[in-house]
Image 1 (cartoon, rainbow, N blue to C red):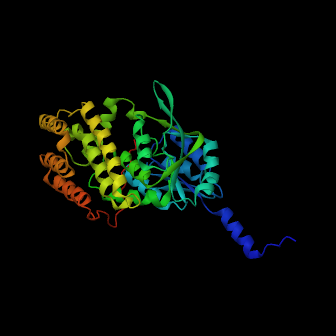
Image 2 (cartoon, rainbow, N blue to C red):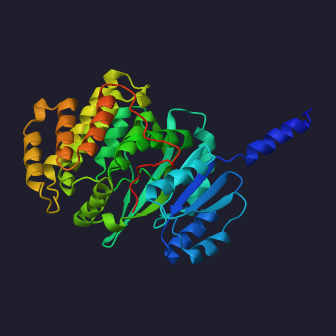
Image 3 (tube, rainbow, N blue to C red):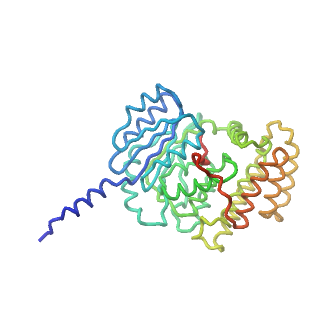
Length: 382
């Protein structure tokens, strides 16, 4: 005879049915109709297991009035004063309550059927701590055409295989646009808030940290359409990189050092970060070697602009010196060279960089730069 469920059982079942599994996050600034249509589409996904949080920092009164009509159950629209993209992302992440978060760009497009599958996929993998995210196939759109992309081996149990799969794809970093565990995303963003400067390549360092913490399960369908926008040519991309260096108060010529800085920071974290306690030293070093070798190859291959800075010649001499010192490079030496170059234009910036990364490579806790002010996060957004 079937047992009749108690009222408490029913309440538990109803609570489980109402629990938010996924938070769709959409920090937005663009004011055009295309961006508003993307927001409207995202708001349509809100339901019992999916919350949608939109945070608009455009300051545009007409857009705010329109977005107010999109708000409904499990769909929150926040209007905020104008702020930088990283703060907008950080603050919308703070509002999330789902087990997983999925961040969208307001100039991109997401496929409805992929979103519909995510709560069920999360339900299936949610109790497996080795899985930290859900990814899929991406459409990459430029003025010249559209291509499809996916990452090899990101579902592997082997951390090195996951990182190798990520590095083997030479297009834009779209892994960032995956559904990931909220706790992990928050933890990594908090760490990146303490890094002295926000660089455009930090989205790659963040993706590296995600991959080292676990694997991604792929959905067998198109998930996201990424519009390359200002990143679709080398010249335009370097101009965008320059914007990050200007905000950081660094001389434009540091652009020539970009990939060795990325290699140094990533490899330093792989070997020394306490966020990767699950990886023993024997596994860390080969991954660090792979990461640094890949970035060093970019450093040698790409002739990046100095943007007519008076320090361009010194940057070029330093590049040549480092490129000819392959077998003699250590974390300490690279850090000293980078800091010395930064000091040519800003002693304070050089000191901040040196102190932070010296703590990392010597396995000390860096001094937190966070305070009562809104959290900052490093994310590559146009």
